[in-house]
Length: 211
Image (tube, rainbow, N blue to C red; front, side, top):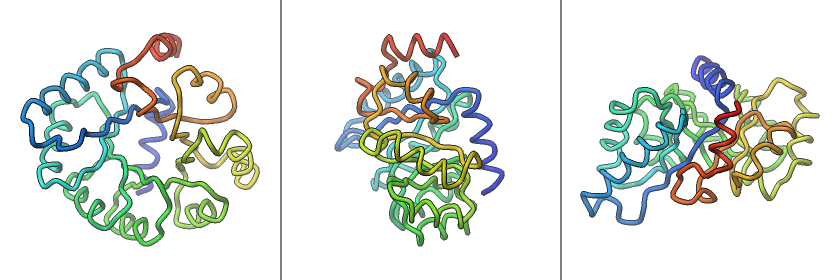
């Protein structure tokens, strides 16, 4: 897991933005949805986005879809969002993803993930879960929901562990706030539902051109 953590940190240092795509309800019931998703990923890639998370789905066709995305978009660092159950964790083992994320810290899930060398970045919303995550060897942490927890919470975690942890902000992040959030100490940010259609708007386009 350490190698995967280091690789992701190095990749995010180059471009510290993750776009999260969540599949529509009954996504697999319509064959055209797959083409629309591929077009969306292709468009994100054309803008210069290098990190994309796809939301986990319990449908049996989901694993095949993620595998196909990985094979078709080699320039994109594909991860998975919402790994928070035994079922979701087991479904990603065969994919051997570079990274995935959980909205919360569930020690039993993270212990199993570490056993299978799967990087499941924990979502942290309190200091006790943060301590436990560090004790398990995590040096990349997601603060969730960042928009509600605020910069003061990030500063508390930084005061506790100084500069050894790479912090990703997620949850309610708006494109107009990217510059300010990076300025206030986040190392990377994940943006999803707040971005219409998960397509870069003028704020992100400008930010990408300036990094």
